[in-house]
Image (cartoon, rainbow, N blue to C red; front, side):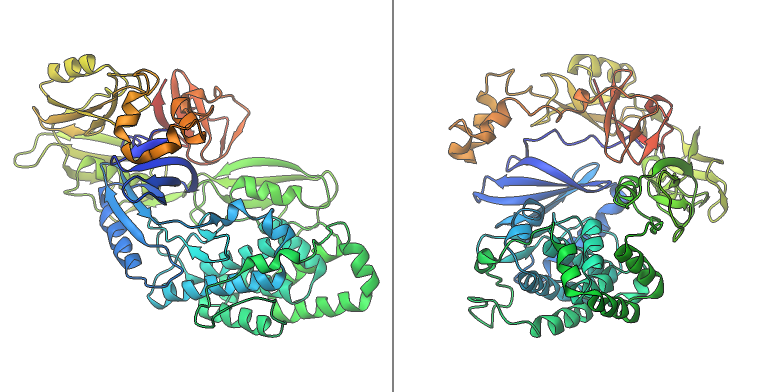
Length: 592
């Protein structure tokens, strides 16, 4: 299956209504864009998720379930649709800013620990609604939790999330609490809390313990722990004007809270004395499972012990190792692992709990996918859907064979080798036999005239539409439907979406006509107008650096190689994009 054509670099307009600006990647296939709704004049968020036909029903069902939530903290889903290769969900209106814009700024300097507990209590009240309905949020974090200037907390629902355990939501809330009360990243903050000890450290540790079985089972159980601690603290002044509005957290009242000097914890605890440290260590020993207790004690004593890094992205694992009180040499190796998702750490050498010495060499084994794969039942599916399912299962080599067939549309799967249900090594070649047809060439990047000529020569009929918002030169094909490589019947219709050209090419008139609701924001020389006329450097994949061997590329990295732009699907090193197989660590995203 061809990689879905990426949305244009921001800013761009969807459906003639939503102007999408900068975005953040929530996971491998999902990007969340800040956007402006021309119809309502409000700020919204657009979630773009790569989704084949097989995913659309599941996504639509989840969106329907999310729309059924009636908690005042949960933002409303106002629009949802799917095109050929992605699903888009619009949520809004958006008030305030995501915690990612605040953490380390407001929380580090102005919000007391009691304020953080109030905010977490409000967030858990919304997650209770999710969990009671058999749903999990799945993406609680600084990009999906919003705080307005008047202290109101809002939670952004995320449509493109597979079923997850409510304990994962609890873990995410615990990490947010840690970030808010320390002003540091989650892992760095947990280390600092372990040094200080006390009830907050225990509350965070209870939610973020490595074994999910030792976490609270859902938001209601964790909220009971939060409430119990909060009720033992004196209330902050001018808080909670109405008991009927538990989600209102006037963070403004915390402006006078003194700034905690990060250089003083050691002096402070020296003054308190060794007795307090002993008491904190005993509390940790009682309330945290043994493996996590041992880690906390090592952190408190300043020792260096190999943490559990399995399941983390390599960059996060490396950051944790760099935060240890010894200098380490970190190396990487690629392995196949049935239990760990591709691109995540599968093992470490030395192993978890091992003592680490100054200058020691640590090797992180990164999963390249499962070692064995099971052949699904693909008979009757179209070729594109079958290839997508094989990619998801982890097959590395797939061969497509065409065979004449009466009564079956071109590209329909007739047989597979191995047969459905058999388990084989990932690198065994899987063969799918499909009904005979004509394979579509790749005409993206050609001029409309050249693309028409190439397709007409093969007997296809051609329909041309305009691809609004495309950054390609005027008259160049931006998208083709069906995708290149699809097997279709002779004489089938192919739709070409052709770029109308950028604003620079047409003197800027096109955008002004296409975006009548944008108002003065683009006429007054403000930031939005500047971005429209000249996109910021780095937003075009073809502006990326050339691929280089012996360089580590994290998930989402862009490179240019042999005249094409590629995106890293997972962490990789020393694998050329040109040599990457269909489901290797690189996928082609543009022709440069």
